[in-house]
Image (cartoon, rainbow, N blue to C red; front, top):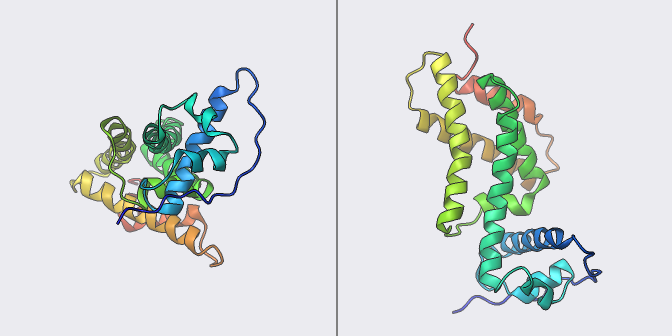
Length: 208
């Protein structure tokens, strides 16, 4: 049975974009599409009209930026990964010390997930087949973690598998943000303290 088409979104009126504001509308369309993907759990059945309604524009306005809803949905998923990658790159590049960069990346990861729950669900909570270009970006986000873990293991003279430890770290951080977002009324320890506990538990402390 085909998935039902999502078209029952709340509409709001949006004024016509001023000259030079077309890129903002394009970004708004990408974010709206990501929110619908997150709510529905997949890209199936999400119409261009639903995305237009969520953004507050006419379907005609959408066609100025995307040829069809498939292109828009693919671009939306890629936008989520690109946004996440920029956040991690900025955190990593804030200094040369691997341990400090790791802490910054962990906090930036958590902040992105908690501030952009729809986009984060698109990344990690639903299975979506990625086109090749998007897969490259998605892999680049994980390689930032692999790089930092490798540098910390070397500093600790630790011969554990970098990939295995990186997967452990990613699983742990995902658990932190997933529980924090799904159960916001629980008095969780601070993100900083949980990330410190992560490093201590996984033996990623700076050598004396």
